[in-house]
Length: 162
Image 1 (cartoon, rainbow, N blue to C red):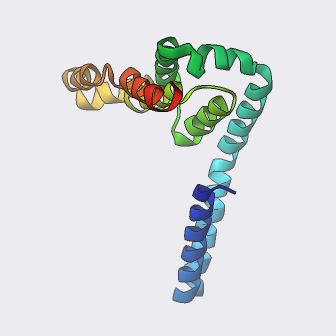
Image 2 (cartoon, rainbow, N blue to C red):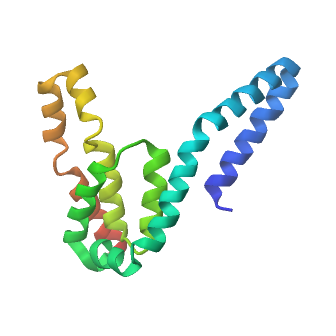
């Protein structure tokens, strides 16, 4: 078990203890909402786990290492930047996929570029951003962050992969 999981479990245990200390009705409401959240997110998680599991056996590790590994250099960083902006969904979708790519041989630079592109350039958010913020503000944000994913990937590559 990694440190992140341990921290989440400790915080969850503390919340359960606090709810039980405050009274039965608080704890009961907490458990109801917990079960509802499980029910709401379970299909998403099952889909993600299937996607990751089959990706690991269908996409050869050699291909991931060749195109996104440390040896791919700037090419891998640019590919990861492009793919990162295409991935839909929130962190529950993206981070498990990114972790799978890293385990399969993607370099740190490519992974950082992927995460940064997903965070800053996600194409799935652009229609909503356009509708709410307008074209001028959206363009200003996109132009001002244009070089961030490759730059962040390159810095990570130089610090951790090279």
